[in-house]
Length: 165
Image (cartoon, rainbow, N blue to C red; front, side, top):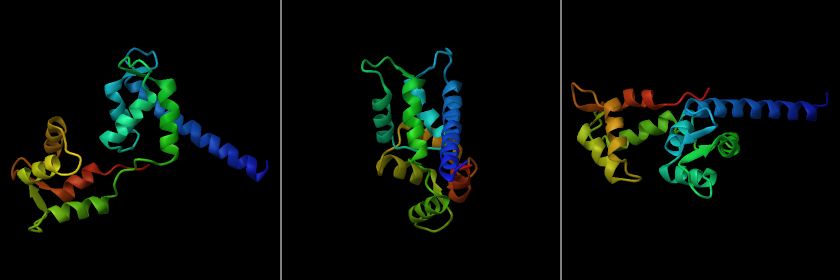
């Protein structure tokens, strides 16, 4: 087998593996077993595949895969090529641990290794792309130490980091 043929075979194998991961993730939410999922589940599916798009990026992806007349459902046949392309291009990768740590350290003006719940709420709802109330409650339930009412951000970062393998 020529080198070029081997490279093509390897590339095809990688694509098949990626498409299997996408299909497996999609099928978890395909409750009717008809190769469709509720449009509201797409963000969860995309994040389960290791991608971290912004809400704006997610809306753009939905616009790409929704039907001309939105039905509230996304079909696998439209989702699979888009998601394969995104994973092949390694788009929407999670932020590395060291950058997350530096971001928290900038917010931690007292350099004490934690933020108060109130500080975190303020930063996450008033700066950048604000969190919704639901997103904030979900984050706080995972991040805040109930005994001290603080976020020990080094511990929280280790929970947030996505394993790339």
